[in-house]
Image (cartoon, rainbow, N blue to C red; front, side, top):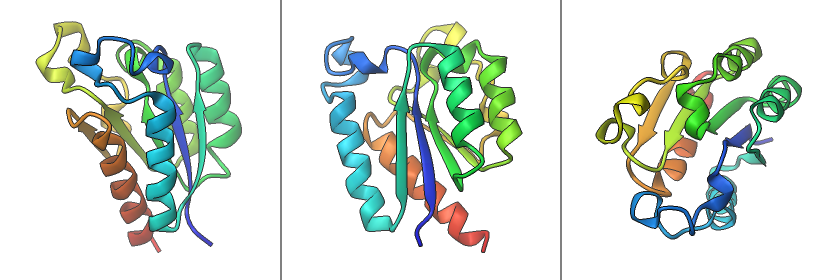
Length: 148
């Protein structure tokens, strides 16, 4: 049986394709999810995908879904820079986490330069648009496979 991966999308990512396409690109979240499902199939992984604009709902999903999954791929969006609650929930699962961002946050506003998640993540992939998700999924599956 393949690795079970929880994919989490944070606030405003439901607006992809419309919101600041010069930064985030023209691909919608549904298209990114479709791309991820196709990639997961190639990698022999099974995905559970969840998006919310609400911090508490993301924390609830991590608490509920984190333990039965093998790893977590997360774009916490703005919560990356503000949420100790998301961080604590991820730590609670004890599962490997890969943090992804569509844009290179280090080339953006100063407040985006700090992440509450990076130091607990296996790795961080940013700046490659939708490919950041694909690269993150590949890296997470490879990390999980190496743990056998």
